[in-house]
Length: 267
Image (cartoon, rainbow, N blue to C red; front, side, top):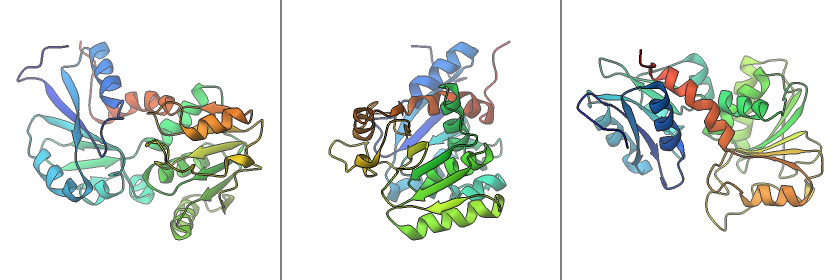
């Protein structure tokens, strides 16, 4: 382990639960490769404590920023001082930079990371139809990114239909010509199938969609990184689908996050 001194810049990741996060390992590897004197550690904070935790963190003069994951991506936005226009339209953030004056600036990189991860594994999105279950923080970002990168039609399915309708409305504000449908638990008839919910994090979770409708030729994708092989991906593989794991999404975000947080290579 690298030596941590009074010069080391501190970063954290906020989550609840925290056991599954892989970002500390990946980001600290990035710091080492870049020769950057920083360390990222896990911060376990419950939703009812998020505001006071963030209020305390922003007062740390050696804090460079915070990465944010489930379930805090939506709530964190209202607790920050500034955000990009797209981040506000998405309604969630997954990275927060502490400015020199202590102000917090939020940004959302989940969508960009997800699409880059898909493409890095040979799965192009342009001209494809996509089915996404979920309408929370990650799902919001992914929806905007899918349309930006040329998905021909997007179906959004969510347990609370009003949230799916709200997401559809906000995406259409930015992409008024987009084809967006509100779906059910049936993912059939789509090229790309995405679980953008937290279902699958815990053993015994219900499947996020009707896996019996999956067919050979579909690419079935996770945003969950731990466990690597969720029940949904197992079901998809059994039905002859190509599967896409959650890890490439994080791998493609690390450099984007580091850039946003002001991490620069030594020398």
